[in-house]
Length: 201
Image (cartoon, rainbow, N blue to C red; front, side, top):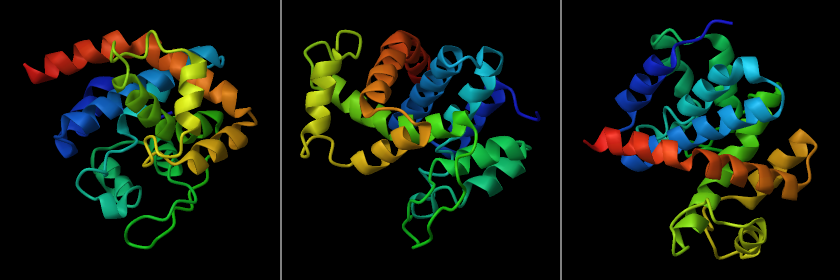
C-alpha cells in the first residue's frame, strides 16, 4: 500500500489550508479515524486511516466549488497513492458540489465508509461542545448530543442526511455512530488542542 508519511501529509494539508479552523478539522478527522481503526480491528492500519482523515479536505479551502474534484490533482502532484486518493474523494459520494458536478466515487472499504459517516458529524459534535460551559467534548453525554442532533436549527450546515446515509452505509444504527464518534473526539481532544497550540506559536 503506497502512502506518504504522516509528517508529509500534515505539511501537505498546511500547504493548501491556512485557516486554523480547516487545520483543526483535518486533525480532528485524523484522530477520529485513528480511533476507529483501533476500535474496529484495523490496528495495523491506524496510520493509514489517520492520513486519509488528515488529507480528506485538502482542496476545500482553495477550491470549495470543486471540493473532491480538485483533490486528485493536488494529491497526485505530491506523490500520494491511488488508494488514499480514492478514499479522500469517496467522502463526497453522491454530494453535488458548487460547480454542479456530483461526486461519484463510492466508499468501498469500511475505512471509507467511516470517513463518510464521521466527517460531517465531527463538525456537529464540535459545535455542540462549544455551546457547553467547558467548551469540551470530554464531559458531553450522548443524550445531550442526541438532543442537539434532533434540533433542526442547531448546526444547520451539518447535513443530517449525509450523517444518516453514512450510518446506513456502515449498517449501523445512528445512535452507534453518534456514540462512537463522540467517544473518539473526547479521547483525542487534548492531543488536537496541543497540536493546534504548537501551530500557533
